[in-house]
Image 1: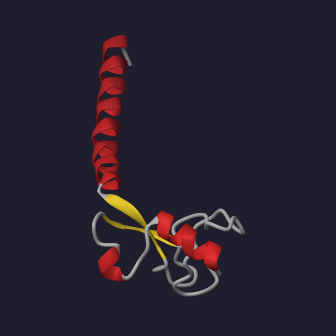
Image 2: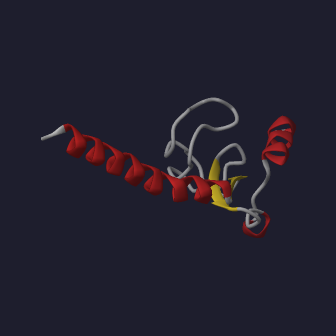
Length: 93
């Protein structure tokens, strides 16, 4: 392969990666963390109490310390809590 072909191939690969990662970043921006709606084993990441740090490790349905990403603006309609509300709920328990 000559140098011009290698450069063209590399440039095309980088442009493809940029196009594929762009929508994912925009999609994440339209989401928010919603606490208290995750079913057991269906949380998206670490919980508020720090007892685990991975997705899929929640033990109970609708635990106020567990969260899922939802479309921005839909958390309240699903009966969920913001992070601040969930932290306040954890302190009261």
